[in-house]
Length: 122
Image 1 (cartoon, rainbow, N blue to C red):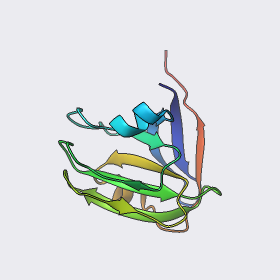
Image 2 (cartoon, one colour):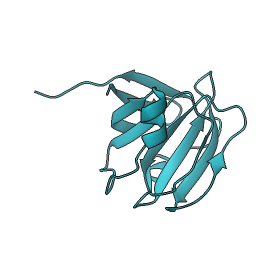
Image 3 (cartoon, rainbow, N blue to C red):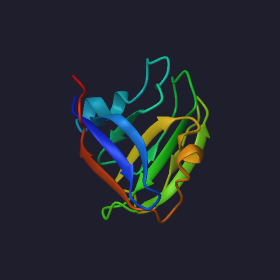
Image 4 (cartoon, rainbow, N blue to C red):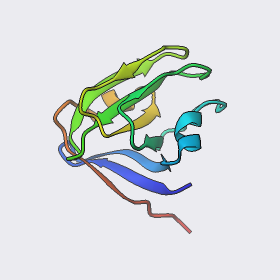
């Protein structure tokens, strides 16, 4: 899977240093199902996507909904496992993050994000 970095340009914060990208039907459908957790700095970017569920998940997540202009159009904090729906009108992609990441970075609706190539450390 491709790794990217997701930065909040408005707040000058990194939401995810190592964010996997799920583009295929299978990868988008699987999402984070089967994982035990997301570590700090990790995330999953799902594209295209405007809504998510947390059925069969084992841990709560923060979800950032982003439009085609990379502007945040919705936020769901600490979405618990087995929730049927979270979404935002106009979202083009979502970024799933460890619970608490939205608050820690101060991310708000209207902020502008940038998805960039992840820099790997030797």
